[in-house]
Length: 371
Image (cartoon, rainbow, N blue to C red; front, side, top):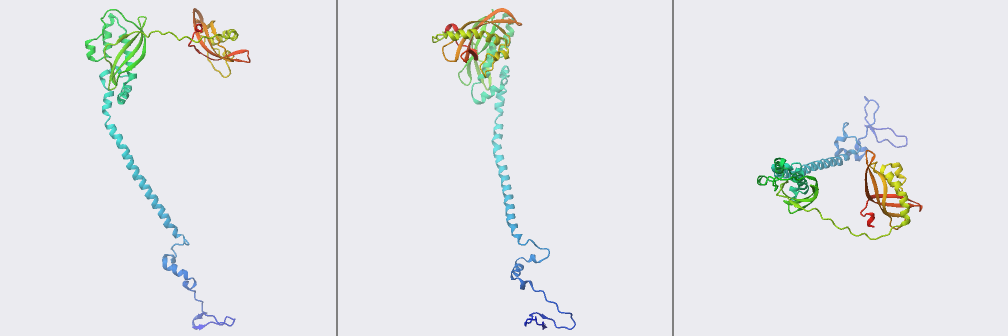
């Protein structure tokens, strides 16, 4: 080997060439990677696959794979945990429902009891009350009302039919011993109207339903004993004939004088209002109403005749007055000759100190004559 020529600045090149006469001009040797960059040697020792042509070329991005792997495994573990807990809790919550449904056949049997086929129209009411341990009030009232329509009607010509109908409401033992429930088979009784007046519950199985009835033109009450068991009701025995509610004396209203000036004004204005109120003309009726008030009339069922009485208490621009009106009853739009006096309570308001307008009209708790 020979040293190369001088570089021209008085120094010699440190590069050596092979001294051979058979070879061409010497070529410079490529420097080793370790000689160029000491860090490359360490990288080659740690990551040998980076030296291959088909290896990683991410320029240092390989470190991102490990955090991504950690995130992926954590996600999978969370999904698996949620799935297992969902299955466990759904099975736990379903277990009580299964046990409850398996214990319910007894209730179903009692609510479908055939003991009283006559009350089969209300099994839901009875079964709900049986489950809650309360007396089935609604079922008992309806059952007693139907019983009263049979019991308060009798005629010797229909005695057999009545006995069959009564047997639908009472236990078989009572129907066999007392098929007419106390009637001796003579005379007639005719029910004209009836409704439930009240019920006195005496425990989870017993109550007395009171019916208010008009029988042979007379008002009376009928006490019907009712027994209940497992959502089924029966009439437990013979009913009791009771007196009609006694009349009471009305409390005396506070004495009050009428505002004669306002009364005179209203007596002149109200007849026109009641004429329109009777025929139900909405457009004409609105002219008599206070702003914002909407009202419907009587649609021609009656015709105005006159005002029988009017009381106007003293006050401001708004008054609560009492008016007695006489209506003519119509038959196919023609006065029938029948007249009827009724009493209204009215709220009226005066505007501009001249005209009164109607705010409200309803039934009155007092008659004009009681003022």
